[in-house]
Image (cartoon, rainbow, N blue to C red; front, side):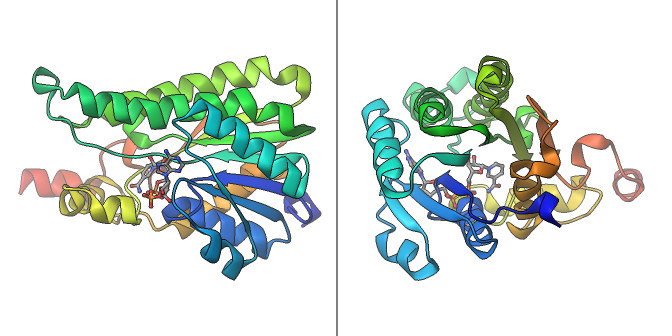
Length: 255
Ligand SMILES: NC(=O)c1ccc[n+]([C@@H]2O[C@H](COP(=O)([O-])OP(=O)(O)OC[C@H]3O[C@@H](n4cnc5c(N)ncnc54)[C@H](O)[C@@H]3O)[C@@H](O)[C@H]2O)c1
């Protein structure tokens, strides 16, 4: 089990105050890591209540990311695992009606947010460390009206691969996790929450939407020594959605 141990690792999770990020923070603390919960919203009390340390970070602002990493370093020292997880989802209509304000907002957080993490994170990281970016299955499977989000997550995968090459000299591995619809506040607050759940029920061979617990072990594995030869990959965690069409879906279509 040493292979999977995260004991005494220093871990920073952006967007750690909710949903997938919060589930990761809790797991890492349970596994004996020292965890920085970085978020744009004030999570001081939340962090304290679960044994993490809060750092303010707005990933869409370069200066905030730089100061956030400095502050994290002052609190716990160099980082072993960085999870660039903060992100938002906004529907902007089909391309012909594209709302450029929404496009910019999504790209500022989802793309530049990860780019700033890759720019400032490594200088505060140990050799042999690793970075995991939260992308999305949306990078692979397209739905009308979702393009700013889908394109932003495709960009995250591109950033992941480039960073894996560029950071090899520092022996930092970089991978992405690409979840499908997952029950989090982001999904609950979205205008198409019911639609997203229905799509997962129909299109995923596992026939349900993901829970954050379905993802925790995946991030844990990629962060651990067991994944030491996995680098520059985008791991899709979608219950088999992108694998193809299940018999149950075919039967429903043919009904
Ligand atoms: N929930 C899903 O269905 C799903 C599916 C695939 C990928 N993802 C990705 O997973 C990640 C986490 O999503 P979630 O569902 O847990 O969302 P969530 O809304 O529950 O949590 C996101 C967190 O990010 C924080 N955040 C937002 N903007 C920020 C900023 N500018 N700077 C720092 N923190 C910021 C929020 O305050 C929040 O705590 C996102 O990158 C999202 O795109 C989610």
